[in-house]
Length: 119
Image (cartoon, rainbow, N blue to C red; front, side, top):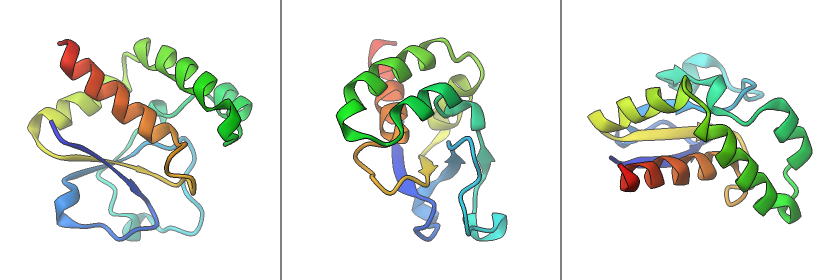
């Protein structure tokens, strides 16, 4: 299972494998054709409440990470879909966050990799 992260503003590449947009909102300024997305999984993103509470504030990162892990543990729709595609080959989780260190996509990748180890 290979899971990568990439901003939607970076060009698509064949090495990306299956490209999954994991943002709840469509990124500004990107057409669907240019995005090269194979699947848009809105439900993989944090809940609107959690997203608003975090508000991309790095000082809230650990709390956000813990709460988002909790949401992912109960996500019976999006998480299995990502795992299914990852079992077949490379998956790239696409996001629009400017801060690539403090993005929900990084937490989602960590969660999926941790699940793989525990399986």
